[in-house]
Amino acid sequence: ENLFAGYYETVLKPGELITELRIPAQGKRRAAYLKVTTGSADDWPALGVAAVLETDGNKIKSARLVASAATDKATRLKSAEAAISGKTIDDKVLREAGEAALGDCEFIADVRGSVPYKRELMKVYVRRAVRAALDGKDGAH
Image (cartoon, rainbow, N blue to C red; front, top):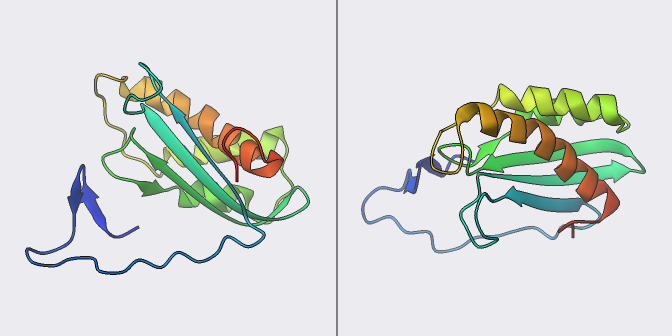
């Protein structure tokens, strides 16, 4: 989460190089990534939302949510994570998470959409990504 400084920009200094990346096994966590494209499916998304959840049934033990494309850099949605962690998921909790996510992001306008449009997308797609991860559908693994 600290690697990216901005759009296509990292915090690496000249001459620094990433030589190894370790990604822990997902174990029993559930995950989903959803994106919204305003053009073709291969187009750069207007918004991307990833959700990784540790669950006990529909109760969220821990959550990691990240947004991209609508923001200058990939951004953890810590307020949205807090809104769902320790809770049993229902429509009210998901609406609260979608609203909370708005405070975690600095949205950018571009050819794929205005800031107000991307804010609305965020509210909807945080809910959908969490549901997809829970249900094991729509790109969930």
